[in-house]
Length: 420
Image (tube, rainbow, N blue to C red):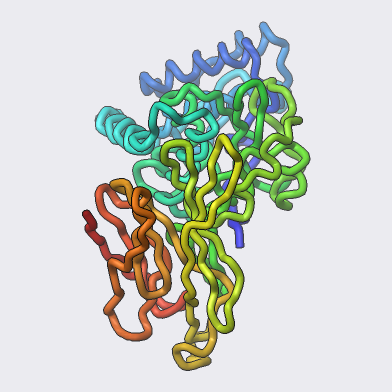
């Protein structure tokens, strides 16, 4: 189940909450740079913008859009609150006040952390990667290392990249921050005010596409609780055309683009191989690697490891294993079945690429796949009791971090594994 809870509110009376502008142009860019400079200097009180309003003949709504564009062209302004207070009248905004959520004395250190986090994201990018490869890599990295904030209090790029938790606005700003500032890939934002949701708008080559990291960060639902699936990544919302975006989710409707950019008419990636892949997609030397659910074999699922060759556009099955994830309790906590009798309908197998090997898991084991020898080897057994199961894993520096528990109704526990 995809995430559908996003923090995105519209302007109301005396207090306004930042939303994306309909269009950006030279005039709004000029205002954005003007406001950003004053925020960087921690200007207190009202920032006077009347000259910009008069010069451009902006209406109240146009001025609101121009002000809010600051947050989508300057995601590094993470030290500003998500709301602002406009001054003037209901017909004309002449000034604006922002609230700082971080003291100036801590900003330099926070910026260092932000830069370090960004460099950590792109550390795995190689020179032979195309812009598509890079965009996919960052998409997967952010999703694997950030959890949705169900408290709806974390909304900026710093929350996402440094703290590892945010709402849809944080995912969007973090992705834009990395692609624009570190990889030279033009990236903006799309938003639906009616759906309270925001996502990215990315330029690949000469075409624009929609990318929604929030909805691609896979959830599991058990009763009234939601769980971020550890190591789980959907790719159904990666590089979508307008047509696919409209039909992909109810969250993608009535959107506006933050920037005067062309429509996403290209359908080049609407039927790409990654649709339906719910694990990370690992890149190495012109190939992608991933695991999928290959269907059932009796009371077991078949987990399949694939290689997709980019130039040949061919998929090759490399390995498969039989496994299942068992559920013991209902959402109310009562025991419903004995271990080994009732299974989940999904698989919880993740994939990690490290030191020339692929690692993927069943419910009890971690396996390695050597890209040179094509050998599959069982290298780890979870020995925490018969009922404990591995519910995903991610790369954690030079280690692998697994999440294990009895089923989705139990808290997760984590373990770091070191492999040569």
